Amino acid sequence: MIAAVRKPSTLLMGLDIGSSWKTFRVKGREARIGRALSNDFRLKDPSVSRHHCRIERRAADWWIEDLESTNGTFLNGELLEGASVLHHGDTLSLGFSSFLFVAESAN
Image 1 (cartoon, rainbow, N blue to C red):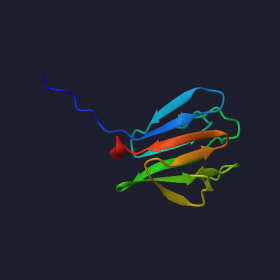
Image 2: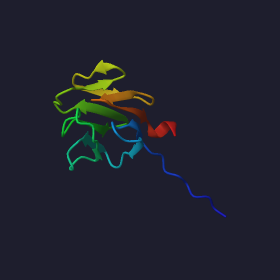
Image 3: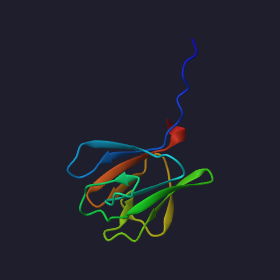
């Protein structure tokens, strides 16, 4: 019997305000996060902007960029200014919602 090979995944795991634990699997090279229906990861948190931030694959790295959100995006407790590289175990805070970045190479 041949075992199925599990493809590595890049994940955001955490709590959206007013809901239970969530896991978002990043599909493709980019994911947008916010309250609007058009986002890849939709949050209910009213302190999150409609189009809050995006994560994007650039060469071998994942990057995060705030999309001029009202309350900002925080990476490891620091206000994000411009785009920044994400590392396995980084924490993201958007409004009252917090997430852990799990890089595919760490799975």
